[in-house]
Length: 596
Image (tube, rainbow, N blue to C red; front, side, top):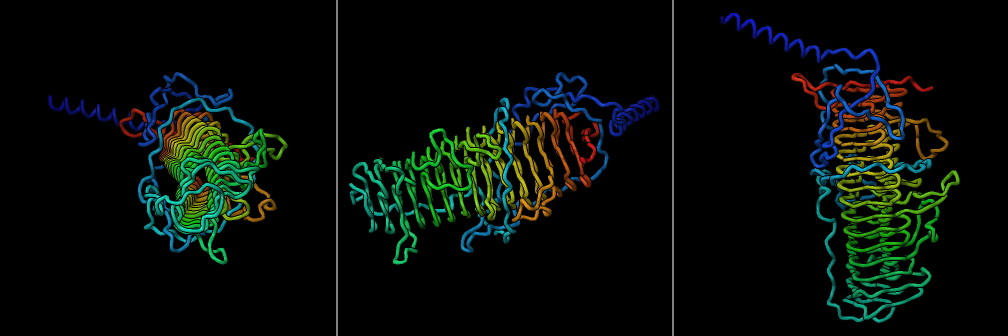
């Protein structure tokens, strides 16, 4: 009896082993097949904070064919398996290797030493209709910078400055425009009017409280409140100046600081100051523009907090400064930028709201349309080592967060983390010609492209939730040695696209275009689902690592076109399958003929 039982158990074990071997080495089908997938309503509630989603397996019982948008025919591919048993690549270090080129040696640099803020959960909604997208003008680059300090504070640390002293008690009444030349506490007794500068602060340790009164300009001449440099040579920065509770309209800038140390500007309303657009909101395509709500020049350790800066060219404008905190402001409905940093380093933009910052202009083909490089938060011309954290960048901005340059160094080693960016006309986040930037833990949805990056090296795009993009989740042009990891990319046309295009060197006089192939990028641990054309698309992109990604309900999981030599594709998964031995490896790779 015992022998009979032993034989029966042996037969059962052999049967299970045969089934496992069949599943491991199951041949691909000889005929192409339509991509089909079970759509489960629960997958629309994937968690951005945990990175876990409910993945539906590919099964013959599928109820719906996944089709690209605009009614195109579903893409068909041959089923393939990846059988190379290789170990996964270790997660790379996220710290940037370069430090800000403009950071002074006595200021702390900024690196994340703790996990970034958790992204805000999203709700899946239909993607917007794609407007005509103009050709973007290439943007220049800058040379590598020295190494950052590894002991710098994390991105969630307190603002980089402390509040300057509030000054003496409010004892000096101000009833007319004029100069403030002595320390002390000043307050307005009523509304002020001027055609030119109104209040001119020329002293240290001044507190100005407008008590809610209005300062009204005429014809956008002068500045409502100006903080001037001091000294015989006008080269001394004013220290510990506080401006609060003022409403300023009708000037070139509402508040303008020539140079300062520890200025504190808070709880003011800056509205309807200079704007360079007409009544139709039509103006120039943006290179640079002057005028708006608050302007800080050559300022260290300043704070701009809890202000409303709306309906002018620029809401809050920080230039050639260091260690500034721009926090908890509403900077919306401006025609250029809600918050603008130019040649500004080691500063923080956190917890602000920016909506509707856009203009109309004439694009290269003579078509009038919106966008024009306007946006919610912009870092320009070598703004390095800044932290852009937990902002609400919402409906109607031309771009969301934009790192740009104009023939000068780009912004390197910035951290963009924990922001909620949605309903943007073009790109939720855009950067080009830059290195060492980290885009971590953001929630992006309902735009054309989630993250657009070009001519870039050594950046990190990690742990973002990107949903309902009308075109791409992440699109990367002519870039190398970047990391894209841990992202959830849901319901776009193409989830992740890396590609290379031939460029005319004569059009890039500042740049060696041959130094920017599309290669040696790392794409791993991403979840890509419900993407209408492909999960990952490599086009003339070589020697990349595509590891440990999870695919579900994409029309194509991985698509390759042109020269795709040397790509290492392994250990990817297609949903969670009921298999006692392993998760099924990647089944589909479409390889198109090289382009002529």
